[in-house]
Image 1 (cartoon, rainbow, N blue to C red):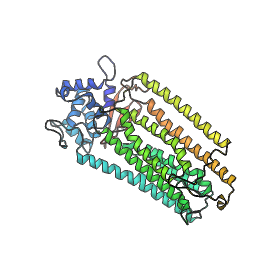
Image 2: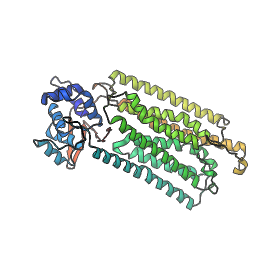
Image 3: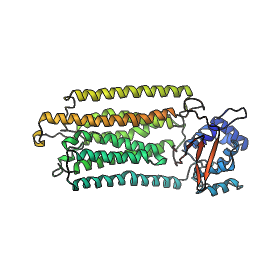
Length: 459
């Protein structure tokens, strides 16, 4: 709907209309829209937080001079019918589709899916996430761990290879083949898992893990400490991702104009991030807690910015978008420079990472490095080398993947007008329909595919 609104061509050749103009044109078709709706309603339609009825989509199509095929496509994308022939039939019929009642007050037309429909979407989404983002990776972690153990566990290099294989699998799952209806949640899941797992590379040369599973009798010099560490990180990242998605739906299920965008994004990002860090502080060694105290706020800030960009209430002008893009680029360059300097300083000063993994928030324990088969100097040198490798991996991920996604999101930020660095200049907008239904909204030589989510749609 937003794509059609922004690409609408007026008689004088100008392009695009505001949400208020959409309502005025809809009121010319049906006078009720001048009294019963506001621009906040249109904002909720476009963000996906509420679902317009088929009758309202028909009125919207008439107001913007859309063809019956285009209106049928909108009805199908809204999830009001199971297939495109049914959508075409709804457009051509005299009446509208029956809507599920959600116990709204009499005389008020429901715009939201019923509780039954919302519960089904929520359960389906949670089930898919648990199956493909938790159970499947957990099985792979266990299988790879026992597979390496079967051929003879060699902790001097297998632990690093084990961690690298699992990180690669999770990144492919969440970044290459994400859930289209919850891309940001999957990105959050991958990022948390990467941030939690990268420090394990620091202790891999010593065959230690960040949660001290190696201290369990019989576990040292086996694959079990590393496997349990990876499973713990997966459980923490998955729990935080579910919280992220739940809080996101809660914050954006109502009127998007209630409250501020900053409070909404804070409620979505900060609780799951704080939960993960609190668990790490309690059960991990103190050196990991210190490192994550720097990384986790940066990660939380980036995801708050990504959510704010998607917030329907945030509609910056072209000048504001240029400023945000330049400011984001400058912050990224400064942060990257400081991170690189910190890594170089640690590499040149081996005494800096001098905190041995001998205590956490709950207790401390004695470490006899001679039992490890190394001298004190060798242990510090190995910790230093492990820190540099883990810091380089984390630095690359935060700069190129997390920072890169933020820069792209700022560049593509939607504004209050159709001009600016991210404005589209297509000559025509058409709804592509295949035999199976809607194929996408085509803009010139590229294509934007809207994805319906029952509470807060995303692209």
